[in-house]
Image (spheres, rainbow, N blue to C red):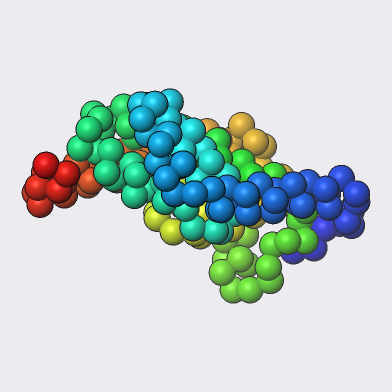
Length: 182
């Protein structure tokens, strides 16, 4: 995909800001991120917002949510973590919206572009549930295709809540089954 409007100063600045934010978040010390969990649901929300605001760079949020599954009710944890994760995904969406040319031209991105065009929000919902960095590319594609932002969030949010609730349930069960942190 190439941008029809070219590289305007606004697009370049937006992409640079998103890249800087992603790098800044990726280099926050692990201990500092984990300290957010001491703030309960708000801390988990903020941790997931920050972790999902990175584009493609791995972050530890799902591990923290998994560990917190033994300490918080899974549905509340899933709601807080999923809400933060969904809002954090706006960085990828905005990167695509403001800089269409960043979508790589490869079979995966072409397939995702076709799916988002054909199935719209359902693609975003399913990608939000599946673990892995593929959602970042899906968010970029949704932005590049100019999916309305509220539509993007309306499909992303429940997918992320389902995913994070599952992670919390999995973590709580694993922690209990193996006696971790006792």
